[in-house]
Amino acid sequence: MEKIKSLDDLKKLREGMQAKIKLRESGNNAENIVRVKVSMSTCGIASGAKEIMNFMMDEMERQAIEAVVTQTGCMGYCYAEPTIEVTVPGHDPIVFGDVDKVRASEIIEKYIIHNELVEGILPVNYRSIDI
Amino acid sequence: MKNIALHIYDLVENSTRARASHVTILVREEPVGDSYCLEIVDDGRGMTPEVLRKATDPFYTSRTTRKVGLGLPLIRMNAERTGGSFTLTSAPGSGTRLEAYFVMSHPDRLPLGEIDDVLLMLTNSYPNLHLVYEHTTPKGKYRYDSEEIREAIGDLLASSKEVRDYVREMISDNLKAIGAEP
Image 1 (tube, rainbow over the protein chains, first blue to last red):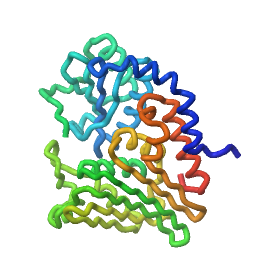
Image 2: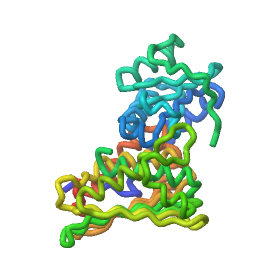
Image 3: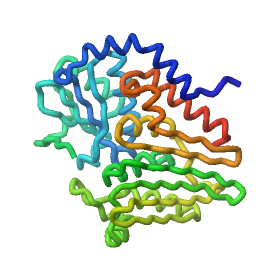
């Protein structure tokens, strides 16, 4: 049987990646980062928000988009879960509802990269606050 | 919820909203006693007796964004319909303890599900939360500690899929090694 992975192996993996990280950190500019918040309450989790969060994290990395993907609480749109809030630098946050992987790809491709609007934007005059 | 891991994800969010800084999750498989137990203990601000009484009422929530709160009622329902039990103990200032007992062999007992993914996401999303997950089976015990992971890899968790996949694999391999039910 293959050896079970341990914390020590994890540390080794990290050492091997140091060079790559430094490169990325130098390009880190808080104001130019895309922010994605995935709504993760009972309603969101039950509708598959975890898969969307994984997908967004993986895709942002794959397409080399400077982004922070985090989770947030229920925004009150339980009927439209999974919902995500996307903040592109210089723009107000926009909330998208009924996000599946197809729609998530569309949001990345059209809204985040090309700044075109995508169907399925929840009509909200909504401001996010830090709790 | 489809599985216990998703319930854990959901319930730990309650703890973080109660400003917990430590959450301990215990899963115990006891095939001899036909018992599968999930226990979540946090050091959040706790609940008053009045709130505690209403906590498993689906039409009660402490949120203002909506009028229903289904997290606790759902786990209670899932435990009770296997013939198991559910208890919630809490007091203001001394945190909350949740215990859900499932009858292990009951066909309605939820599978564990993708716990590796859930622990990873929680570790990544709540950098200030100390999360411990302990899974015990007759064959042994596996302990996951979010601090250890953060110490080993820093913020690579958020930025590298390779690291995330590695941590997932580490958790699921260790659970397999103690013969944890999937």
